[in-house]
Length: 152
Length: 152
DNA sequence: AATGAAAATACAAGTTT
DNA sequence: AAACTTGTATTTTCATT
Image (cartoon, each protein chain N blue to C red):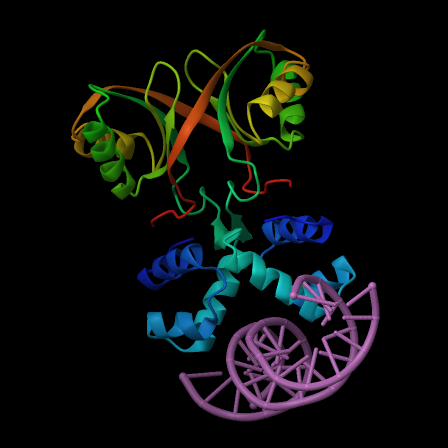
């Protein structure tokens, strides 16, 4: 799919505030409400817009502890990889998981209440997964920047 | 602020789909539309809900290349830290930046088109920041999981 | 792009706990 | 007092033209 300038601005506006009305958007884009509406529906249908979500303040919901957990598997067979990825997807504390290059195989972004909860997560959930070799945790001291808004 | 069960379910529902109507929410919560509406307004006012955003498909917008870039500063004076953090916030390619424990000072999540764009980012933007000592890049091979939905 | 019916939101007034 | 329900004016959505 190809995006023109209007699409690009529209997607940025929707990333910044998804609850804007089509009227508000139409004024910013110098278009009619209907034209904006049709573009949004198309972007949703094409799967460019996967959905809409509320962004919560992690501190206010008592989930401000973020850890990057590097994971190495004992083996790299298809079976090991598939099995690990399936299991890790089910862990609600793991917000993100990437298969990566380098010394470790995976990077997990883990979000919990605090150190006690992290220790609990490590001992009861993560290390009990099959095929895990070693792990290395990097703790977040401060969140400097965190945005979901991608420029197009 | 204290959350009851209704608040917790409501926040999860809004994270899963922020565009649900209050009517749809009210039926899932066994409440009136107005009660749900008032709760949402309160959560927004208190800053628990920071905003609403559209989630885009990174592949479809040609921004599927993700790199975790570890950064070490040459010095750790207040001035160096403040200066680096100010500058890194301005870089649109950096979606996330955390001050972390361990060998490196910061972890940056960088999102660009591909390797060529990343090289360009590194050489023209990142390494031209003041006070940068060394960097270490870990490249994403595959996104296994990526959610913004936090369980309460 | 404009129209207009249907639906959703915003809000007032009154009720329950 | 806080949170709920009902009722309604205004605004938005969205199919039709």
